[in-house]
Image (cartoon, rainbow, N blue to C red):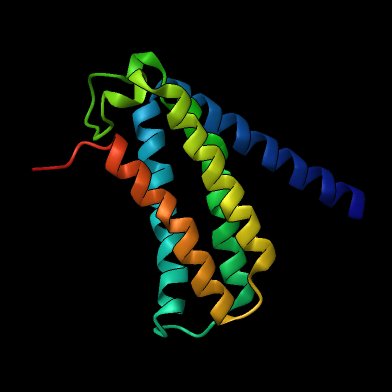
Length: 149
């Protein structure tokens, strides 16, 4: 029974990963937007905790930090040359001009999120971790996002 449940769960996970890869290849802009939305939702969870709007919840905080790690791993592949123009996007041309730096920022974001996940034990440590991790967001957006008018 346990083995069949494990196999079913593994099959669902595999289909999910394969579907994500297909969607990303077909429409990388839509895939980027979906991941950014997911990032925003994860950020809302931890920011509300740090502001005292919701109670500290270690499991929810760690889930948000894992979400950041997942996004950091997936996002760099969603900027193929073919998505440089066309479609509705705020991705700046500098991304393709400085792709190595752009990708390195996601590596740092993922590493910082992983370190934060390991270090967060209470509200005070979450506040410090969120401040450090989300600095990555602002730095990347400043350099690589076209500001909407």
